[in-house]
Every structure is written in C-alpha cells, then in structure tokens.
Image (cartoon, rainbow, N blue to C red; front, side):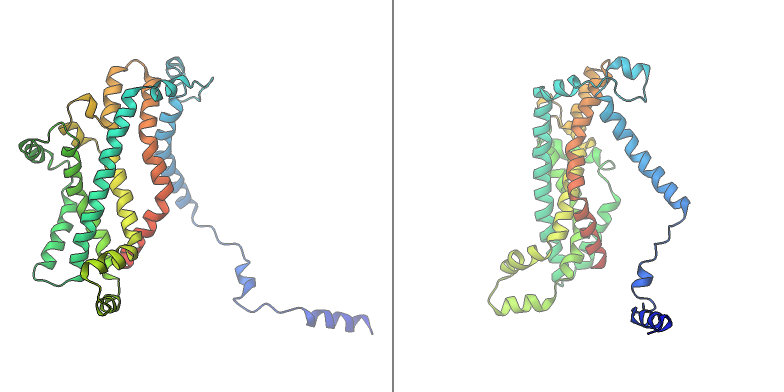
Length: 299
C-alpha cells in the first residue's frame, strides 16, 4: 500500500466536527469591554476598602494608625479583639441584637406569608387595593415615620423595651415580604389546590402542607433580608432604647466609640465584631437571596 493511500485512509478516519458543534464550543469566550471590568473592579474596591480598613485597623495600635493610616498591621496586635470579646457589654448587646433580629424575622415571615397567600390565591373586592397598600409601603421608609411612630410606641408603653423595636420592624418589613412572596404563591398551579380539596384537605392544611414547602425559596429570601435589616437597624433603637442593658450592637458601637474615643484601634475592633455576624450570614445565604428574587421576578 502506498504512502498516499495510507494518508487518505488516516484522513478519512478522522471524525469531522459539525458546524456549531463541539469545535465551536472549544473556542475561547470573548472578553467584554475593558471599561466594564474597570467600573466593576472600581465598585468592588469602593465596597471592600472601608470594611478591610476597619477589620485590619483592629489589629493595629493607635501609634500605627497615627503614623501610617493606610498601612498594614506591623506587628499584628490581637489584644484589641481579645479585650472586646472578654467584655460582658459586647455579649449583652449581641444577645439583644440576636433576640430582636430573630423575633422580627419570624414575625415578618409568618405574617407576610399569610397575607401573601390571601392576596395571591383568593379573589375579593379589595384585593387590588390591599396589594397596592403594601406596595405603597415601600415608598415610606422607617426614617420618615420615626416621629409619629415614636409617639405610638410611647402611648403603648413600649419605650426602652425590645418589643418596641420588634413590633415596628415587623410592620415595616411586611411590604417587601409581600411583594416578593405573592409571585411565588401565584405560581402554584390551581390543579394542586383542587386535588388537595378533593382529598379532603382544608385550606389551612393546604397552606401548611403545600404552600409553605413550595414557596420555601421565597420564604428563605425574605427571612434573610429581614434578619440583616433588623441586625443593622440603628434609627429605631436609637429612638426607643434608653438604658445600656437594652442596647443593640449598632447602638453599642456608638456608645463604645464615645467611651473610648481616644482608643481608635479598639473602636475599630468593636465595630468589626459587630458587623461580622451580618457579613457571615449574608455570605452564606447570598445565593439563596439571588435565587429567591429571580423566582419572584419570573412569577
């Protein structure tokens, strides 16, 4: 067999790559505009730089901060964080923040899910007006209503109590919860509800057995948002809470900064530990937040 024949057979034996097949997928992806990446990196730097400065500042001494404000710790000092973690004040404020955040989250999720179920699954005369009312609540943040809200809290005798923070946070957290959950509940097929009714399931049974599991992505999303907003809330506790024993961590940071105004490194350490729980919580569940919001948009 000649060499030309061998070459012909070897060429014919090679599989041909179809157009638009694997060969096209092996091509390297085209990069976007450099300007887009520059803006994205600039935005990331703006967001990360203050947090990094606060965290690293807690590992420095006041002399290091004065000499080189933007420098790295050299040597690293761990006593600032150790002193804060040994403080009973920090852990008391941490407990108050945790109680307020958990209670507010549970109230927002339960009440929001119930209201969203009624709006999404039943037809009645004021259905549109009720949904519009919750949608309008997004345009009135807590800061705008803080003065009349304080008067109501005072009349109810809830000043300087954690309940005076929890109840308003639940009320102001419902609009966002309803807006996110209603599309999830509307997307549940009516055939499932009809089949459950034929099997003898009551409305409450359908709500607990079918609605809650099927709307779990949206429930997790609103729960995470409610927890983070409650943990970081500063204005409402500032107006409602007076005694140091009831302070939450945002108020504790302010009080600690005033008490140790000359010890900048320790103030930065206290601030870092106050925001770490929210950062960790958000980092763990950020994918669920995106997935829940995507489902709400599709619904």
